[in-house]
Length: 193
Ligand SMILES: [Zn+2]
Image 1 (tube, helix red, strand yellow):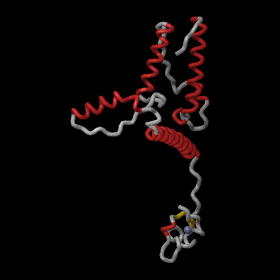
Image 2 (image 1 turned 120 degrees about the vertical axis):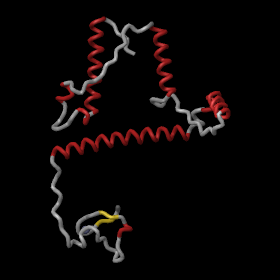
Image 3 (image 1 turned 135 degrees about the horizontal axis):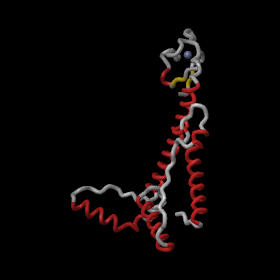
Image 4 (image 1 turned 90 degrees about the vertical axis):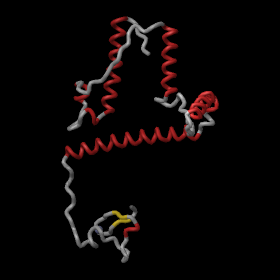
């Protein structure tokens, strides 16, 4: 939308010009004048701003992950996919037996967060630590409650905890630090994996 009505400022596509080379769908050359829209109520405006921010964060994350996947798809040779030859052979053999066609196999390396190889590597690392240091004495899981006063007190105006994931993450990390600290005092030593 690169074109603009000279009277009311409405934006147009170039192709929307009529036969007289004018844009007339908005105000008919300034003949129609409407009062400007009033500002949205504060509650709606702040909610809209928050949702826009979350939408931007979400879309940026999608873009980053998408370009990362695109890179992996385009650079399979550099990632030395031929090392997985056994896997390819097994898949092709199974496809042949079941009379289906194999598609192009894309291997997600362990450096891609959340991929099966990443999970496998984390598991192997954890097992290696158990072998070295012995079995863990405690297995703690720790979750975050959005009704914590530290979170609620940090909200501005009409914000709800779900509007501010950034604050929730920071409070959660501080709480984990505190729990580790208290455990350290309680039992004297701590190895955190
Ligand atoms: Zn106009």
